[in-house]
Image (tube, rainbow, N blue to C red; front, top):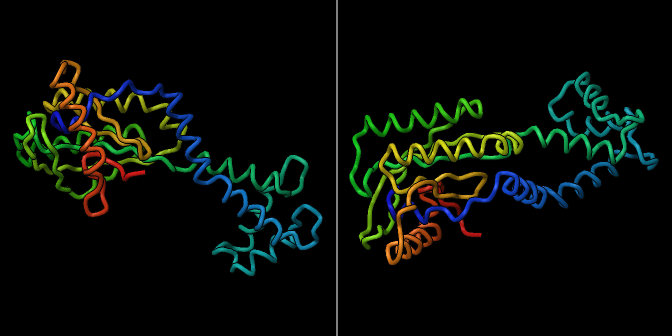
Length: 256
């Protein structure tokens, strides 16, 4: 990504722990009250005896009404046993605790590195070089998170520091992981992006961590008017060029 693209050398990045706390707060807000309400409602539907706990028979009756959710009878029994709390019963507390434990291990977080097809602002690179960039990023993310997905090439536009409109193809490369793994790997991902930024002759590279886009690398030597131009160009880019065909372009996310 070039200067504008680079969007301001990121403002002081939040510490990994602070970012993780924010991600957790966002996750709880998304899932939060509605999820708890759903679980409480589900509990009441199954608790036919209204005694504050589920019996195996009650659970099996409920599951059969749902065609066992595609599970076998043996699996239904195994699920019930997995929901048992320390006191040997299934109540609201053990149901919610089990759901939280499972959610903590789900790949709910997305990491995307936006691979640019230019260098030095608007100089287009050849297809072979672009493929090498994409492969480098995909291999890195796979080693960090167990796999990576390369999205189709998108076309984006941005205003460079000199006021010219630059058209560029970008390739988003993404991985999915758990909140804890992202917390542990975030600094490594950002360091990698900064390293690639220099190798690719970019002013910055866009990285999206669970919907939060950051511009990594470049811009440390900007001062005065050039610094202000970079700030406004990057701010505009962040607001205006957020998706193309439903896919992330330049690592931007939708308006809040």
